[in-house]
Structures are given as C-alpha cells and as structure tokens.
Length: 189
Image 1: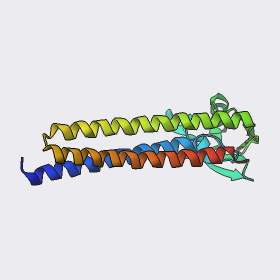
Image 2 (image 1 turned 90 degrees about the vertical axis):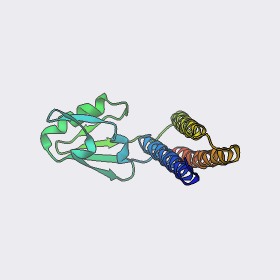
Image 3 (image 1 turned 90 degrees about the horizontal axis):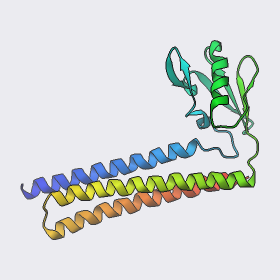
Image 4 (image 1 turned 180 degrees about the horizontal axis):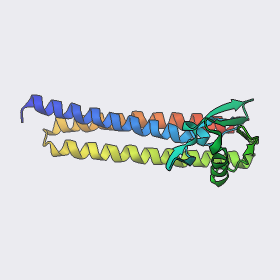
C-alpha cells in the first residue's frame, strides 16, 4: 500500500469517526428534549406511540401539538376517532401527567416542578450524558483499532491516534456544554 492510499485510509477513518461522534451528540440532544423541564415542549410526547391502523405511530404524526401559555400542551388529532387512544397512551406512559379530554383534543397541564424533582431530572440528564461519553470512547477505540491495523510508521500512527483523541475531546466538550445547558434549563424556575 502506497503513501497516498494510507493517507486516504486515515482520512476515511477520521471522517467516519467524526460522523459517528456527531450522530452520538445529536442523539443525546434528542434524548434531552424528551426530559421535562418547567416549560411545555411537544418533544415530551415523542416516545409515546399509539396503534394507528395497526402500526405503532408517534402522537406527533397523527395530531397537531400546540404549546399553550408555556405550561400546557394541546393535542388535537387529525382523526377524532383516535382521541381515546391518545388519551389512553398518555395515561399508560411514564409522563405522570393526567390528560384532560375535551371531546376535540387533549390538554396536558405541566405542574411546576418541585426542587427535589428538578434535582432528580438533573441526575437523569447527567446519567444520559455519561452514556454519551461512553459511546464516544467506544467510537474512539474502534477508530484506534482501525489505525493500528494499518501498520503505519510509529510517527504517523502516533499523529493519527492524537487526531482521534482530539476529536474525542472536542465532542466530549460538546456533550458537557449540552448537559450544562439542559441542567440550567431544568433548574430555572
């Protein structure tokens, strides 16, 4: 394998690693959106599925979800026949919010979070954050293994491994920033 091919292989490994790390951070941010804060957010309902014509479907695909006065969600299904199903799915979920069915839509009122509940939510965010960092380290390990299999000269291998470590550090800082932002959002009354 010539020098040019080796450089191309290294570039591919770096690009693939960066792509995987970016997806990890984006996935973590999506997870953060499903954690309740003091404000209403339609993303709270992302994990709740209903059976719509035999297919498990997220609520946001069968209904419009509006934020009312910052502390309420109003769910209005496109097909009124599934209103009861949506209500039952919300009851069965881990949201802990009682749905109020008005015959046209469902209203979810988010009560103010207690200090203890806020602390519990920040612990949950920290746990998710740590899971994201573990995923980054696993991606780094995979990339390092690929580099070591190339049989590069010692200096080239060291530089490539340093590049992977720099990527890992950069994405770890991004996770820390997202975690700090989410925890601040949770703790803000």
